[in-house]
Image 1 (tube, rainbow, N blue to C red):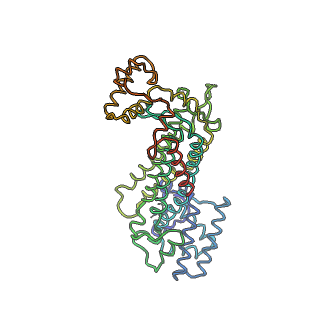
Image 2 (cartoon, rainbow, N blue to C red):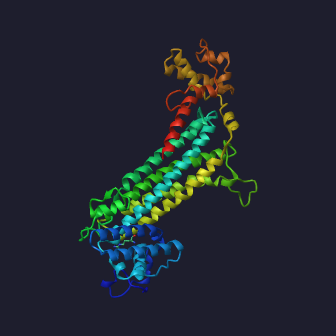
Length: 461
Ligand code: ARG
């Protein structure tokens, strides 16, 4: 049995078995919420005083004691004990050592169930704010690169087959749009999912004192208190909403990572990643590996697993609090840590990436990417699109057979395709891109207006 009095010790004749303690204790995981626990405790103590539940004197002692506990955590002098099951226990135990009975009064009208639900939301709020800013930094770097490459053309792909030329600015701009939606999702987490304070729900049924839940809600920066005490201690929806937003962000980042890995290959050669964001091989002296891009591709697996893990944990739990909920933080913290590390690295890597515009231009010399432009030209001359598609398809087939591009079709091939009477246009990648004047398209003017709008949006964050 392990030593030390327990918060709940009164009902028990003996202490917990060590094996149980090792299973049950969560301090190693939740210690990182010490600041949130102190902030929440302060708000609760202040409210107990204004509500007349605690004397002003006890309130003062608690606040002074909490300030000292805070200093110990900040200085790294806080000493945890074996009997500290979790961060909530640890803070209260130390507070009581410092200020005596006033410390023992802090838990009046409060349970660890509403306490932990509150702390984790406060923790998540900081993480969402920080990561929202990190998404912004990534979007700015992508926009910087995009603005440098409005005139750079590369093949756009479908099915990973060359399809039509696009501007590199347009390609990078696609990821900016994903990040704009990601940022919106993170914003919904902080504005909606994190709007309500569970503090004051008690263990499950509410509390038997005249407490003021509006006061603690406002004090802690929430819009209002939660409406149902059972739901307050049982739900982890805000965590699930965050993990969902994080997982979607990671899917986007993973696709970007995969493109950079492909582009950095010698086969494609569209990008050169800087030494600072690549690594070498322990055996192969010539290697420069795109590790940062690979890890950007990989992390989605963990974060999606965190999302699925949390939802799996919550499903089938009866109301209200269950100890299962203690495991929520493994998933949350793993995802938070993953994004905290990933986003700055990806931003740094992209800022230093050098796009190989000559290789991209060479890839645009592919002779067939203008096929649709040729069909469009016939349509403008009055042809139905379906007939134009058929005729250009025949011309492509003839050119392929002779191993030349569309621009080098000879008179016989043009005649066989039924195009003898048509004045054929100049087929260049630049002309092809410039022709895409529809809103959101890859013409220079459309790309520029897209970047301006995206920059303005990101600058507002
Ligand atoms: N460490 C717990 C958690 O993270 C705190 C709540 C404990 N509540 C209880 N009734 N045992 O969920």
